[in-house]
Structures are given as structure tokens and as C-alpha cells.
Image (cartoon, helix red, strand yellow):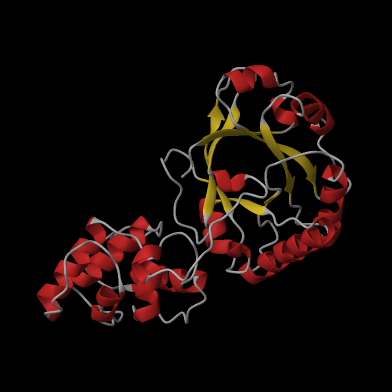
Length: 318
């Protein structure tokens, strides 16, 4: 549950009164430490010296440069923070692609950074990224790490394939103790280092899938069209998946419309036609993008694995 109030800061926030910040109810502060190579945020050490005895939970992030070596960036980040106390998971901030790299190339650079940082520090990082950028530009290797997702103006971030432990919901917030605007976030307690986790077991399909009215509509339509005999309970489990028929480009009808509505709810743009019940070129392109994000064959066909990707939660592949 994302029930911890947090902020993230850099030199752009100027002086910060952490006593007032804490009194305002902020529980987590994440401070920019480094960017690229040979760059430490000018206020990094000032912030650290002011926050370390404040009673706040805090940690640090690195803004990844597209121009410089990822391993060297990881080394610089660790060198900047290794002698400091912190109890929040270190963060890699990746959010731009000015060099028109492929998803694999961007992800390769992230993995190089993450593995080098782990070798140096013993810590895994979390990943800060924008919703659409993370969904479309980072692959499953990166999405094994917990995600801190920027998506503004919504109560919870869009589905990206990450297990979400943080949501940056505005960049124009205000908090007592900071003059001017500041990024506001909600975090789960998994943002803390050495959080004790319960033993995990393989989850059932319905536990890693959405549930509710969208699934009920699908179950009702499968019962109507295919005489599937499903219990209309709103849970996308094995029985519902097994009843899903393969849908090919060119199809028309209510199942196609439900697929389109689900694509839209996952953040895929079907303009100008929207959910029009017609499996045309725009829908095919959206399906292929979804398949690419889940490392599926990009054939535009709604088969078993694509159904699972459509109705899955934001925790990556099944």
C-alpha cells in the first residue's frame, strides 16, 4: 500500500527546512546525489548534513546520463553515498532517450549500471521513471527491480510492468519548509532497506491479474458467445483464461470491443476510433506494442499469452 508521504529534492529546491518538512507530515525524502559522471548535486552534502539527525527516512538517487559509461556512473554514485547513512533503497533515475536507442539498448545500459552498483555496494536499486517511458522503453530485466513511477494527476500510476513501490503524482506540490514547488510522492514500506519480506509462493493467475467489472464483462461475453459456463465473479483466473478464444485482426464484435477497452485502460492510444468493436490497423499496432512490452511474438493476434498480458497487474510477466 502506497501510504507513506514523500518528497524528492535537488538543488532546484534551494534551502530546505527539514524540521518543518517533517512537521508537515512528510515521512520519506529522496535526495539527488549524482548525475552522469563527475557531477555531484551542489546541495547534496548540505541536504545530507541537515537531514541526517532530523528523524526523517531518507535516501539518494542518481540521474542517468545518456552520454557516459553506465559502470562509471554507478561508481560515482556509490562513491558519493558510501560513507553516509540512509535507510531508503538507492534509486536509478532513467527517463530520457535523446539518442533514439532501442528498448534493449536502453535496458542494457540500465542493467550495466545496476549490476555494477550491486557489486560495489551490495544494494539493489529501485527504478524511477515516467509511466509511458518505463512501459515502452525498459524491458523485463529492468522491471525485475521495484518501480517508482511518475504519473501526474491520477490516484495511482498507470500499468508499466513494474512492481510499484512509489508514485510521484505531481511536480507542482507544496510543503511547509520548502519555498516553491516540489515533487510529491506516495511510497510503500518496501522503499526501506532491509524490509523483512514474507516468504513468497507461486501466485495463482487471479492473484496477479486485475479483477472487477472489466473481468465480469469479459466473463459475461464469453458465456454469451462461447457458452463457457463461467462463474461471473470478476476474477481473471485459469478458467476464464481457458475460455478466451483467439481473436485475429479484422474481427468485429463485443469481444473485440472489450479488448480495445482494456488496451485503453492499460494506456494505449486507439484514437481516433477508440473502442469501436473493429479490430483494425490502429488496434493491431496497440496489440503489437503490448506484446513487445511483454517479450511476446508481435503478431497482433490476441492469443493465450496476450490475454494474460492484457489482464495482468503491473508486476511484470507471469
